[in-house]
Amino acid sequence: MAKINKDYTKLKSSYLFSTIARKVREYEAANPGADIIRLGIGDVTRPLTPAITGALHKAVDEMGEAATFKGYAPDLGYDFLRKAIADNDYRKRGCDIADDEIFVSDGAKSDSGNIQEIFGRDNVIAVGDPVYPVYVDTNVMAGRSGVYDESTGMWSDIVYMPCLEENGFAPQLPQGEKIPDIIYLCFPNNPTGATICKNELQKWVDYANEHESVIIYDAAYEAYISESDVPHSIYECDGARTCAIEIRSFSKNAGFTGVRLGFTVIPKDLKVEGVRLYDLWARRHGTKYNGAPYIIQRAGEAVYSEAGRAEVRDLVGYYMENASYILKGLKSAGYSAFGGVNAPYIWLKTPEGLSSWEFFDELLREANVVGTPGCGFGPSGEGYLRLTAFGDKDRTKEAVDRISNLAKTM
Ligand code: PLP
Image (cartoon, rainbow, N blue to C red; front, side, top):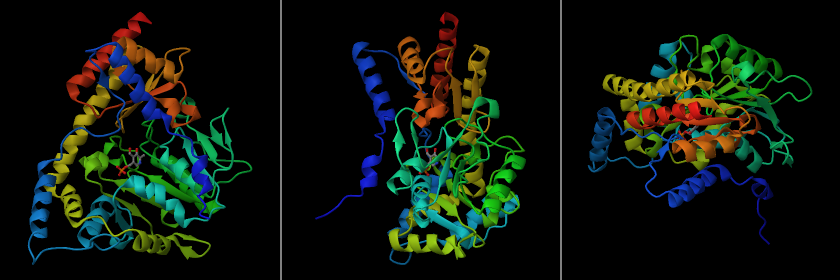
């Protein structure tokens, strides 16, 4: 008799986005013609840029010629892309990363979800709270979660590191009984938009080396960093080669959410129980993954061309203008708002006494603006709403004006 993986049945249904969609649908049905602005989406909206579409077209033509046709891509990525990544994202920033320490993939979601497979089931994991839900859910699927407590919204075997206003929404180094074996860090952060400076990140690296823990560093929003003391890579820290894995994406810098491309860096010096994680991840890739498509990898290479870099800067600049408008507008209207400086996310504190969902309802009803309730990202997200800068500029301004006007009536 077949058996299912019982750990999958433990997963909590992801009510967040389906509940948002239902509430918006119901509101629209009751208020036909309502002009709703969505600032809840975490997806980009601007089109691919000319350097990228040019590279895609060229690669498609190559695939149509016998002389240049490509079949399966190398499991770990084409050399041209691995070199472009290692040169531009790492060596130019003084990080010691070799071309072959880059593992090309179809995105940071897959990598951040799959990476736990190379670790034993008995590892204790630690996550920031609130957090990108993939880290928790994939560890639940793998049986590392323990029991769910409905009253706290937490799993018994997972270490939650609260990211609170008093600490600038940065997690604190875990102390006490449960020293985590695997620590997920995400900077710039989704959903809070928080970052930490290099000195602070160095403390995490030192902690991980001291306790023989591994940091999984999700830097999917690296391109949004605008402040000079914020590290772009964990490998800017001394000793990170022996304790850290870094995950990156082409989704939010170059707009590849529908194209799909990302990568993971595993230094060869990173060993657990004497075994190189590099070898385990290479084995996993070789066994379960047949490589990102040639066409897409050529598009990724174009991101690092002179034209590509300039276009990506503009693209990120467009969204960051929105972020800045949201942040400043809401603050001057009297709201407490955070993030938005090194990230496309604004973490908006709900007005006194309102829960995340109550404020969501109020914004929908009174301003026709949709955000994402912070409680959907973890218990410490209660009392916040995430707004994103990925929308159209004029619509974003209109939304901010409406939310600001609402403040006057509250
Ligand atoms: N990591 C974080 C923190 C994210 O917010 C997202 C997407 O929203 C991803 C990873 C997924 O990126 P990708 O599109 O490369 O799968």
